[in-house]
Length: 128
Image (cartoon, rainbow, N blue to C red; front, side):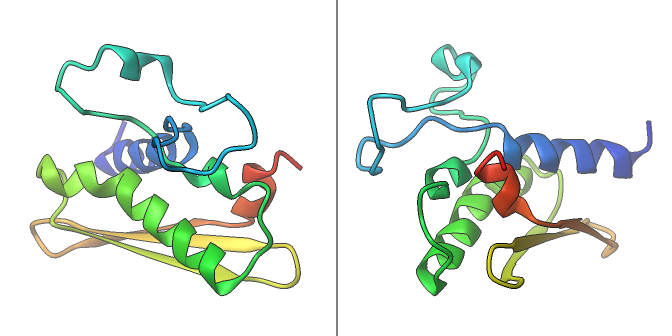
């Protein structure tokens, strides 16, 4: 497996494994989601995944797009914290009426970048 494959897999897991909702996150019911492994992290406070799932009942507005970017950045922050890459840039854009695309650019210590495009994350979030 190449480094690019490992980075791609790490980003995909980080974005599309659902992180447990925070205490102040609005949820529809008592289901706070979350990966079971976060119950006993090896590093205190360490969590895997994103809170993108919280957007599933919202409409696509500028605020929703901002939250999607914030949730994605939060989910990928570990990559710079652990020294895997030197920078992570997330771009979220609306495409049409019911489509949201997300792009992640990873910058490595040698200056090389890897662009990862995730098209139509709205369908994934909403399980359409």
